[in-house]
Image 1 (cartoon, rainbow, N blue to C red):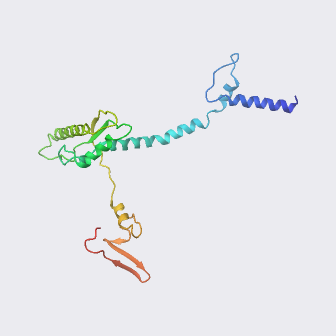
Image 2 (cartoon, one colour; image 1 turned 180 degrees about the horizontal axis):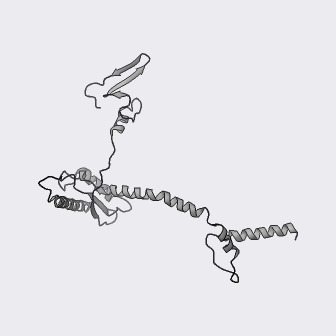
Length: 221
């Protein structure tokens, strides 16, 4: 065997040995001495970059997991506007909301929430000493109404619902931008508020200059 062949064989053996080190060693020693793999791990991280990629991935995803949870809680919430004002009677929208929850596949989440009745029973001098009890009583009646209605909705699997009361802000978006885009869809989409108009009047430009056109009476704004 020539010198070059011996060098190539030694390099192949060394490469194979280091390649078999992996992220976790066997911990074996030869005669009490550290093996080649042990020495290799003392100088480098054999798990690079997978170990650090995993940590970075988890750090990036974790905040979104909280957002997903918060959104799910809101989706499971029956808000005060799902009941008739000051009562425990579900509105048609409230019934549709519960139908949607009950039809979730493969099974609905049994944890439901009711928005506290702070908007239905407002604080006054007359009820200041008992407003907490009044709101709690209405919340309990609404929870019972939800349970009663859900008992009539067929589900894929039997579900025992649990209802809690919390007081989230009512989610929503300003519809003015979407409305403006819809109304101007016949010409050019415009999502900007008040863009190209003054007090509901449309501004047109042409070769002859700028003209201000007032919409006909009764036109929605």
